[in-house]
Amino acid sequence: MKKSRSKFKRYALIAVVVLLGAYALRAMFFSAPPPPTFAVGEVSRANLEDSVLASGTIDAIERVSVGAQATGQLKSLKVALGDRVKKGQLVAEIDDLTQQNELRNAEAALQTRRAERAAKVATLKQAELAFKRQRQMLAADASSREAYETAEATLAVTRAEIASLDAQIAQAEIQVDTARVNLGYTRIVSPIDGMVVAVVTKEGQTVNSIQSAPTIIKVAQVDTMTIKAQISEADVTRVKAGLPVYFTILGEPDQRYQAKLRAVEPAPDSIQKDDATSSLTSSTGSSTTAAVYYNGLFDVPNPDEKLRISMTAQVFIVLGEAKDAIVVPASALGKRGEDGRYAVRVVLKDNKTEVRQVKIGMNNNVQAQVLEGLEVGERVVTADSAPAAAAARGA
Image 1: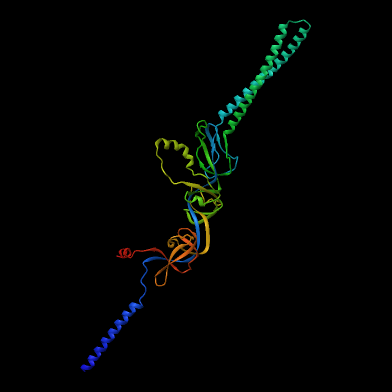
Image 2: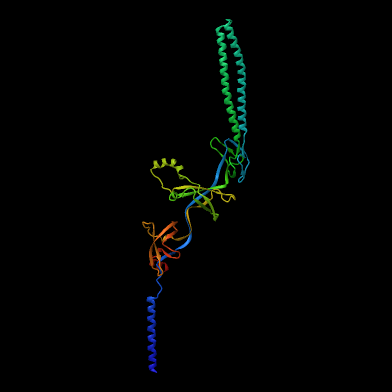
């Protein structure tokens, strides 16, 4: 009995030793590879777009301030906010009593000058007859030389007075035309087709065109809107007219409005202030450095009038596109070589890495197009992570 027990213990001990050895061998040769200590990204296929992001402001393609060139009280306003108007349509009237009186005075002055001229014409006829008679009498020694010269002088003076009256009549006609134009200024018409987007002056208010040009209403063509996109000086060299553009608005972030870039203004808006501030800057000896933006302009139809003046637009100017391209995270790109290829660390099956030289096409700083060197499904190192920092975060 004792022999059987000792034999059982011996076999049990041998079995434990064998199990421990097998476990040790498995741990040494068949264990899973250690987890990677870096961030990994995968090579995949996607549509890639390289674009310039800009902030834009929406405005009407044409917007005018309809002002008054006459002084007086606004007698009547013919339109309301939001009304559609046609070019030449009457939109407001200013009290025209003063202008009518000025026109009557100018017409009366013109009639007076014409009457004076008619009287002088009759006097001229008398002077011509007197001169003719004196000339005949002088030839027959029936009159003195003095009487002849007096008649001649009277004729010349009368002719000069008629010439002066002709000039006065011309001036009076100009005054009549001016008074008639001023009277017409009391009837304010729309210079364009469009919508009334602002009513600045109300009925009963007095407008003074002498000190300034008062605005009555503002009219805009809202069937087509112009977007003014602010392009930074870092991106403006890559942008040119004709590039495709799309934008979104805050109220409809999923709705894209497509267009083409019409123009890029050659100078920033700040150039309008340079002349005014340059003297101040030079006198104080100080200046401030501010970001410089150039306006990119493009137009978009607005048939349903969803787009409104002064809306903010998130503008994307598309520099290039690649459909169904092989892409890799841009953070995986390492140093660029002389041949233009980038060093990329590729993760192998055992979580070890190897460096490959990869040819890159389009790069929007988020994803980069792979032309050569990587295949779909391969993993690449996008960032190294410190084990100690990871352990600290886990704790």
